[in-house]
Structure formats: structure tokens, C-alpha cells
Length: 235
Length: 235
Image (cartoon, rainbow over all chains, first blue to last red; front, side):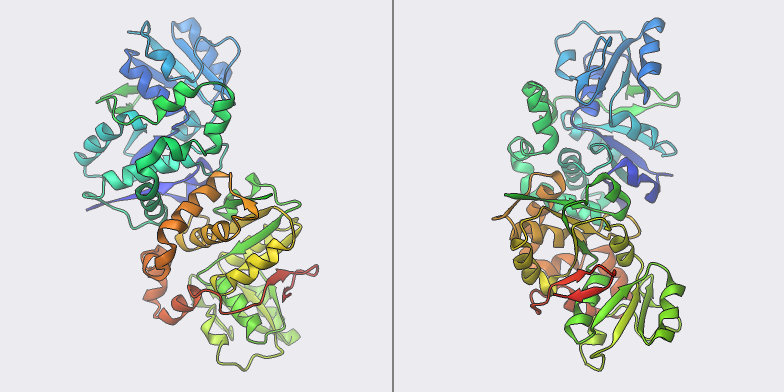
């Protein structure tokens, strides 16, 4: 049986081993949800950037550019960090360069893993099925909020631990705790996570439809991974 | 109403404000449990040390010295990190110099707080009652395990959040999550925490009685704080 563990913040990732593992990067509100939505909506590949200006420069290369800082679309960017914005179509065949506050940094800090996947509730079951075919240990890397623990990424971690319990043993404390939390609160995900501090920040921005999307299970069959070039692609 | 939040590791404490708050430092297995037991058993005051040799040097000053590294008594030290060792008596009136892997470092990193308390299950209710008389915001600082999240410190945090719910609002994600976890698992503390990785490490050392002690509620009415000199004392 393989194992699964949870890292709650990019600031703690140096305390975990990534080598040889599948690392699932999760930033529910909203980076990884948006990445999954964009690729499922026809975007061909996504190149993540930690730096805003490096991301902006990709527009000259023909990329669609998406950028967010503190929950708002970065000045001059075509797209912010809204998954729902991709659902109306019109982005088929485009390549996307994307930067966000927390999510892209968690991807950067996961390098060295056997494989890096992008996790979100809308493709949870697809990700579970894929992992179960790989026979590798799993580390869930929560992007958190500016280095701190957050509720939505942690609860996704709990959902993944629970869904993988037949193949991946949770005997690490973070995984055990989040499995218990998901068992208690997972039946009322939207209600429970409406209390989360990040959901409250997003509600202030008037983007209830994004929150609703980010907490909807299994809309897509697409698994998203970081390929050898550092691009996010569907597999 | 005041607020309560949870920091899961000394490696994340720089992301939290300590100024103006009561910081409750918790290292259930076993530093803070041992501190509470020692003071309740007649030790007059405890001086915590991060450094082993600095702690050892206090023997020449007449201090009892207690030291632990990786769960074992440090070579040449009179006491390890066992709370049960203090219960048989014989330490009344002694001053104790103490160093542990995680706990004393969490105390050091809490400096700047309005007040630093030492938390453990055996004096949970006493600590709750004291806090409710102070009208200050609370930050629970979990010592964790070598910087990582651990189950027993986090569950104590959840117990404290739950016990303070009439006076301290939990609207921070760590506090919300641990309150839910405690509500699910708190009725079977010993059974649930026997799965924790640190409990397993301690079981390997043959110290079941310590684990049992550390998870026993409300044996003492003593509140333990760090005083202006940096000593731990009963109040």
C-alpha cells in the first residue's frame, strides 16, 4: 500500500520529501480551479509564472495572459483568476500564461517530484483514478493563504485522503486530521467553506459564482499535470 | 467578543501577530505536559532553554536539569521529558532548567506577546477560566514536530477553541478547522491520538503511562505562565 501526507503551506514544504512522489498542488480559491476550468474549456496549455511582469511579457508571444494579486485582476491583464470566465467559451486553442498570489508559487516549490498534478474539486475523482493507476506515494501541497493554513485547500486534501483510502495509507498527522475533518464537514462543503476567511474575501469581491464553481465536485474527467517543460496540460 | 486563532508550527509563527495577545504554547507530547506536571508537583519555577549545553550548565547553579532530544533523556541529565516522573514527589522546592526538541523553541518564538501561557490537557479548564478573565485575543502556538503539523497539539488547540467559544470568536481558518476536528474526535481523545505519529514514536520508547497522562483532562487547577524573567511559574 502506498502512503499519503499533507503539507499545509509552501513555507513548510522543505520539511517534506517530494522526490519519488506524486505531488498534488491545490489552491481551491481559485488558481488550481481556474487552471482545471481553462484546460477543460479548450485552452491547450498553461505556463505558470510567479512573477507578474514575466507573465505579462508572454502576451507578445501570443499567449492569453491571466494575472491576479490579492483576489483582483492584475492591471492590464486579459484574464484575472476566475474559473467561470472560461466557461462561456472563446478560448479554444489558446495558450495561457498565468500568475497568482499563492498557487503558482506552490507549483514552483513542488519541483523535484516524480509528478506534479493540479488538484481541484471539479476534477477530484478523475485525479483519484489517475493516481490509483500510478502506484506512487502522494503528497498534497496546499498553497494556503500567504503562507498560512487555509480551510478550503486543507479540506480538498481531506477529500483526496478519504478518496484514496483503499490504496494510500494515511498515517501522517496532517493526512489523519484532514481525513477526519472531511468526514465531518464534507457532506456540506459549500455551507462549511462559506465560513472560510478566503471565501469571505472573495464574497467581498462579488464573485459568488466562482466560489460555487470551485466547490462543485466532478464536473470534468480531465487530469492536469505539469509536463517536462513546466507547462500545465491535460492527460 | 475576542478572537482566537491557531498557528500549527513555530516555522509559521512569523505569519501571525503575537503583540497584544495571549499566546498559549502547546507541546502535548511531552514538553508542556511535563512543565505543568512539574510545577503542580512542587517545582517552584522552570527556566526553558533551546540549547542543551546552556541547560546543562544550570546544574552548577543548583537547578534540577531536564533534557530531551528525539524523545530520549539527554546524556547526563537528571530528568528527561516525562511528566509521570514528577508525580512520585521528591522535587518540591526545586528549580528546574529544561530543554526539549520542540517545546522550548515555541516558547522562545512567542516572545513579544502580552502574555505566554503553557497549555496541556491536564490543566485545560484552568487555562480556559484564566483566559476568560483577561479579555485579550488568543493565539494557540503549536510546537509541532520538527516544524511540521502534529495531531496532538492541533487537537488541544481545537479543545481550547471549543472551550472558549462563548468568549472568543473562531473566524480564522486554523481555529475553525481544529474546532471541527475536536468536535468529531474529542470524545475519544486517547483512542484517536494513539494513531498520531508522535504517540507511535513514544510507544516505541515504552512510555505508555506518559501518553496516558498527557491526554488526561483537568487534573490540576494550576495555570502556568512565562513571567517577566522568562521563568515558567504557576499563577
